[in-house]
Amino acid sequence: MKAESKLARLLLVSPWTLLIFLVLPLLVILSFTLHLAIPLAAPDALLYNNLCFALLVACRLFRYLARSGRTLRYGAGCCRPRQGVAIAAPASQLRARLTQKGYFFDTDGSYGERWDLGYFGTALLYSGLFLLLSVGCWDNLRQFSGSLLDGMGPGTKLNKIESYRAFSKGPLAAGLDSLPTMHITSQTLPDVSYPKGATGVALTDEDGKTREYLLIPGQPIRYGAFDISMTKLVFQPQLVIKSKGSGTLFDDLVTLDPLVQKRGPYSFYGLMQGTILGVGVYYQPEKSTLMVVISQGDKKVVTDLTFQVDQQVVQGDYILSCPKMGQWSEIKVMRRRHKSLLLLGGVLAALGLLLRVVIRPERVWLEEAPEGCTVRMSDKEGMKAIEAKG
Image 1 (cartoon, rainbow, N blue to C red):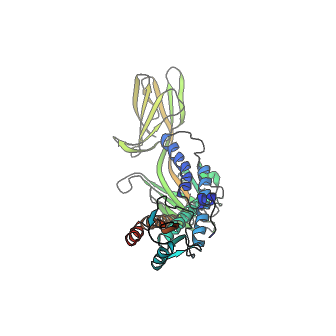
Image 2 (spheres, one colour):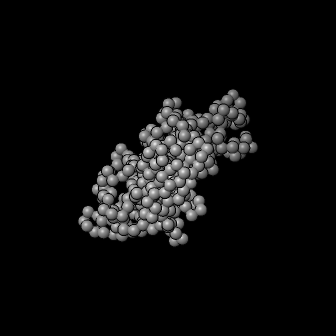
Image 3 (cartoon, rainbow, N blue to C red):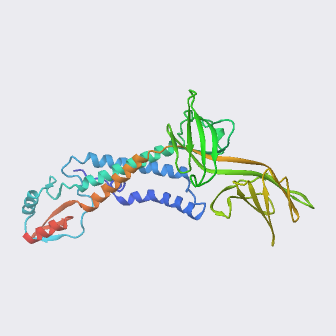
């Protein structure tokens, strides 16, 4: 058997080479965990890292499958034990004894190995890794994820990229033509039945066929190759704060998101941006009541304001009003990933690794010596048997 070069074995056999492809994922995890701008720790770099990883795994899988029909599959050039045992018996005698135990030897009789199921464990490991990486890369290349705020009123075309306030898409992301036009028909405030609220929607496809759904946070609906879900309810009051002495201090929309835990009767909260004041806004949707907390230095002013009831409220040096209020559902559209194939790849890789670890290769090197033969063997039990009979 022709010996492989050291470079070929480094790329196609050595497990240490695979660790190189774990560096970038670790950097990405650290960058998100520690909120650091680490060079190369970007989604595109991670995608290309995984593509290269998948290519190398495919080459290794092809090599292992191509050699699976041979009697000598590992080859003499890899993992040769450093320590040998001198046996007072000729190599030919040991070779005959090992052949009876199922070993196959090369043409000069100096190297032999026995068929073991662990070899197919390695092939199974690479099959699972290749499935996991290739499907994951394909999903990332074609992925689309977009979110939008929408309320009751005119329909929103989900197949138009302009409809989304934020989105991400892969380099090979297909078009959104299959997505429908969405009309929000109802919005349910958080209650016992729907702790995070719910949104009724009517989805109309390009043929004019309409289907109605109730979107509940955490329970996406399937629409073709996409999942459509509601993540939360959002309120946007227009808050105007004036000072008795210096005019308007703030006049803009404030985005109020659900609180993880209620503060008294208030279940939504938002923080004003772009003002010298520290202003927090709480909201109780059941009674349309806003609680505005204004902080400036050591001073704090707290006042309540009921939408469409109080035209304006005077508290200390401030005059507050809320001329309008937006009530929105945050809708997320995501191309569905092949989770079942990813799970299958992970299971195959784990089973292959377990098989490889449990069942070790059975290989032997025989070297002629003046007083017998030097034996180097990867199978410890087989070595003990040879020593006992030697």
